[in-house]
Image (cartoon, rainbow, N blue to C red):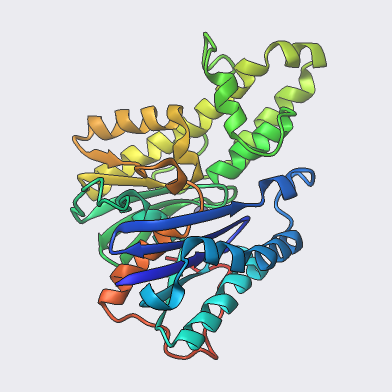
Amino acid sequence: MNILAIDTSCDETSVAVTNGRRVLSNVVYSQVLLHKKWGGVVPSIAKRAHEERIDFVIQKACKKFTDNIDVIAVTQGPGLAIALEVGIAKAKELSLQFKKPLIAVNHMEGHLYSSFVQNSKGNPKRDFAFPILGFLISGSHTELVLWKDHLDYEVIGETLDDAAGEALDKGARMLGLGYRAPVLETLARDVKNSDEFLFPRPMLRSDNLQFSFSGLKTSLLYLLQKMSDEEKAKKIKELASSYQEAVFDTLAFKLNKALKKTKCATVVAGGGVVVNQRFKSKMNTVVKENNAKIFFPPYKYLTGDNAAMIGVAAYYKALKKNFVKDFQKFERIPRLRL
Ligand code: ZN
């Protein structure tokens, strides 16, 4: 069963062809450069760019459409409403035109499956040993998910305000480093004292699995207000490093709590933040202490938004014949939950 999957949830136009867990092709057209000068993703620009590119991206992902596609899959949400609409309209059109069934996928479901996505040769081979603890960390989500079985999820922890990735992005911006967080990691790499500024670790005392990052952001702001430009420039690496340490320590603390609570033996991490090596090493430590194991997405493109993970999640829905029945009622759900 070959699935053509489309994801236009945010600022990447992505189309993939998958077969089971194997990815036959995955094309991502990133809009990062279009949004860069605005300091964030502009929905109307995203919509237009998706519309302009989607046919081209589909064509690149699958050359002979009619021959080899059995099912169409598309992200229904969460994401930017007017960006999601572009993918959904195209998916409906293809489904009707070629008389193929349509499957709706939750974008976060895709991120959960991203650690089980395989290359075209079927590697890596990883087992689904349910229950699995899912840890989703991106620019718009921070969620702990008890993944009980295929398509059976329970969100057991989430953020009360900013997502971890958003907190990192905003920190980078406050430090005058642009709109995306990876720059923090680069700066932090060769710092002697990685935690010189000892920012507060939010929510550690609360006995639940909720996150909150707004207080941390405020403490960075207050600190920067007290520093001269000269001091800031001199200490930019230490500031970047201390800030990301506070974010990651909080994530590690809650992951530890969730592992104790759920007793899951396997963790999967997904979302843009998991590409950060410092994050990975902190999570590895926690998981080891709990005699569990952790899977990260096996290939770097799977950490960002991509249609391959949507196609793989759709496969498990196809096995259960979980198809869209009513095209009239099938619409984007920008705040779709797991
Ligand atoms: Zn995403």
